[in-house]
Length: 417
RNA sequence: GUGGGUGUAGUCAAGCGGUUAAGACACAGGGUUGUGGCUCCUGCACUCGUGGGUUCGAAUCCCAUCACCCACCCCA
Image (cartoon, rainbow, N blue to C red; front, side):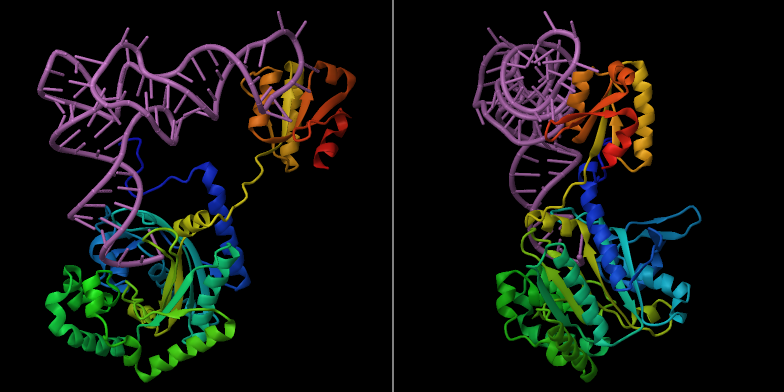
């Protein structure tokens, strides 16, 4: 117990972190090109923010949040998602007073109490972007395009982009009623989970995996047929924008985001290569969220991307992330004088940006070479009494085994070159 | 929350009721005096996730428990 990370959490060990850094750095650079600014918000927020933003009746709020009372009797919740905190901060600091639209990105851990499985953890990591202040479908297309371009820059290009419009609260309610009406006399034949969905979220029934439900659902009305004029026009607009950008998609009426704040655009990038949890990136528009949280009526759109899932996908499709060089120079020394000389040399090298290392376990020369080999040193410098006396050191190229003598004072020059 | 699977050294594992628990990799040391990667030798599980039980005898059978994995649900 003591030596076990809590269920659903994972340590990221040194032999893995470079992959995370690679992906995060690439994301930051991509954001920079899109003029999207990073925002860092606390790991925890007032519980009320998520209850309000994500929605009281969602699974996330109902049974997945890490919520506790702090010593000041405040109800605190560890971020289960990234959008609400950004919105909160945007409103709190009145960033809507800046030029609009405004674009933000974040790289954060998220926490949800769920039963872990492949691609699903209790602490997981998301990178996401948000665009506030425009309801133009150019923004939706930009968000989707960003995700698409970023993913392909990571070598992932066989994902399926599924888009849908879940309308605004008005047309969505009309549609839900139509759907309930359609399913009314089939209710008894629905699977148990779908019986539960009937009242709460009948749209979910549409993509139920049970064969019975799939049959029952045939001929059901489509959300897209119930969109109000405004929402329908927006969806057309979005498709035109995506077409113009050359982004392929399939319209999937089954896409229903599990967070209440979504309106109109909903989309997912899905893979079938990483198990059942194949959504690598999901997002959409949320035109009422900012106002709901107490800000002005400003629309927004964004996505969240799962870092673990992205990494799994890169792994699964053989996208190698090159491991950084471990070590440039190993300094092998013999004797006290040489050790002291080596210590100084190592420090100088490091100051110059050279990755240098020495043995501190008192290994003999053979052991030091072996050690240098294990550390994947590119060069090994050998220093002993002979060298110090003759003012020469030998530098061995560990790849080619070539060895040459260099005057002491020229070591740095030799290495840097 | 509901199902299914697995648990033997750092890793991958053999073993399937009977003397000292295979093997491989990794790791550590060595093969005579200042040079690695190859090769050779040596070392590395009083113990088989944990706790009970059955038995003359259990890593091997039974029960419980814990952990991990996978799927449903949901989503990143």
